[in-house]
Length: 160
Image (cartoon, rainbow, N blue to C red):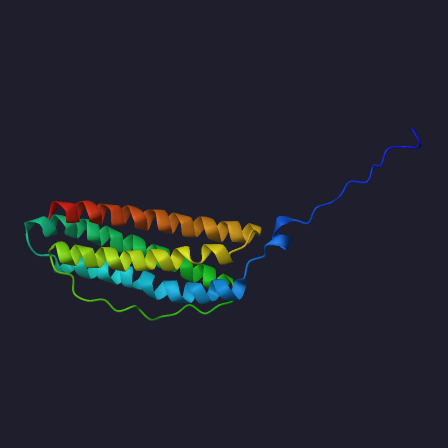
């Protein structure tokens, strides 16, 4: 042996330095998603109150609960955008009346799929910092819950 072994170890950059959150992109995408989230809360609440027909009377309570959950998730998104230094939008994406039929349920599904895509689009911009992981986890929980609602609606549509 020529001398003592090299005790220097290479220190790698933390993951967050390699892939930081793109804060401006995240805020922009959240500003696009929040009005769709508000729409989800509004359309389910509207559908719960406007439901007619025996089949849709039983769905009214489900829709009421969906509306409540959508509003809670909207609040969580607003908290996050404000924490990132952004301003939360106040507008609600417009929606049409939902008929108590297969077409109406299909419209609900289309609205939810649009919101799901907007929320999902935020994830790639969130990076790999600890705060990024927290945001990604929040978004994934919202996506999971909303997708369960879409699956429910698909089962309803199949029965109509």
